Image 1 (cartoon, one colour):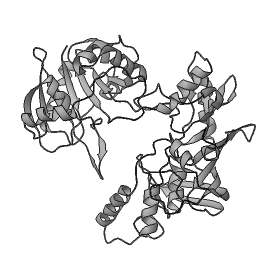
Image 2 (cartoon, one colour):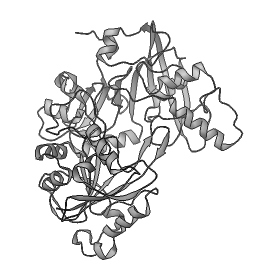
Image 3 (spheres, helix red, strand yellow):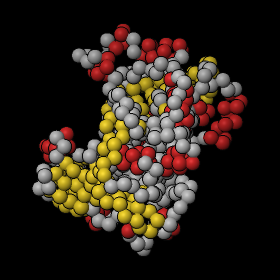
Image 4 (spheres, helix red, strand yellow):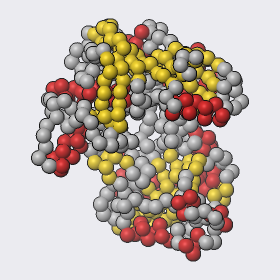
Length: 479
C-alpha cells in the first residue's frame, strides 16, 4: 500500500534524496508538529513531503541539507521508542510526533497506518480510540513557506483530473473536502487521495488515573452533571486525546452509557465547577445561557501579592495563542477583560509537601511567606484572563509557570512590558514589534499540574441553580 508522507521540518534548504524507510523515521523529528508550530521566539513553518514508492520501500523526500551519513548516524540517537500500547499511562509527556500521509492505495485505515508508519496494530488501535487520527478527503493547502517541489507534489494529488475520478467528493467544494474529521473505527476504509494526520505521541493526562471521580461529582440531574474538576486534567480532551478527559472519566464513574458533553472550558491547570451536559439538547441550552450572560462564575485565586478590591480592566490581544498579552490602555480591536476582586485575605504560602504533590513551581518568586486568597467575580470570560490580568497587576497566581516569570521580569526591570503601566515610547513600529517579541519570550511554560486557581462557584438563571466546589487544593492536607 503506497503513500505520500508529509512531515514538518524547520529548515531553509531542501533537496531530493533516497533513503530506507528505517532512516526516514529519524527525518521526522519527534519535536516536529503539524504544518505549523512556534519555534523559540519566532513563528516558523515548513512542510516536507516524502513520497513512498509503491514498488520499493524507499522514500524520495525533501529534507534538510544534511548528508545521508549524518542522518543514519542520528537514527541511533534520535530514533523513536519501541511502541506497544498507550496504556498504562506514562507519568511524563514525551516530545510530540505528528505524521501526515496521503493514501495512494486504498484499504482499512488500521492496516494502512501499521504499514506506512511501521507501528503495531494494537498501538494504532489505541491511537484511533484516543481520537488521535484524522482524515480529510482532499489534502489541505500547503503553507506559504512550502518549496516549489512541495507545491508540485500537492498539485499532483489534487489535480482536477485526479479529483474528478473520486466519487466521494462529488458535490463538494475543495474547501469542504479539505475539512478534517476524526477516524472513529479501526476498519474504516481510506480511499486513494485521502489525507491522514496521525498524532503518534498524544498529550497524556496521568492525573486522570489518580482521581476518585465519584467523590468529585457535585450534582447529577436528568439534564446535566456538575463536576468538581481536578487540576491537571482536561475538561473535554485535547486535539489528540479525547479519552483521558473529565467528560470520559465522569461518564464511567456514573455508569452512564451515553457520554457526557462539554458545555464550557476551564484551563487544565485550574480546578473547580464544570457543567457537563447529558444530552445534545441541554448542551445547546447551556451554550445559549452563556451567550446570554445568564451564567455567573466565581473564582478563588491564590495570588503571590495582594490585590486591591474592585473592578480591574484590561484589553486582550485578539490572537489565539498563549501567552495572552493584555494592555493597561484601550487598543482598538482588542478584547475587553474585566474582573471584580471581591475579597483579598492573607494566608500562609502552601507548604513544600503541597507544592510537591501538585507540582507547584515558584518560578523564582522572591518571597514565599504569605500568599493572598482572592475571591473573583469573572465579568468577561476570556482564555487565561484571570491569570494574565493578575500577572499584569504584579500579583501572579501561585504556581503559574507561564505568567509568573514575566511578572517577575517586569517588577525587576519596569518597562519590559510594552503594554504595561511603565511602557516605553517606541520610535517606530519595528522597535515595538521587537519589544513585543522579547516580552513574549519572558513568559514560561504551561504548568504541568496545578496553579492557585479554582472555579469555586457556578450559577445560572439568576441564582435558580447554584453549585459550589469543595476546598481548593491549597487548603487540603497531604495524606
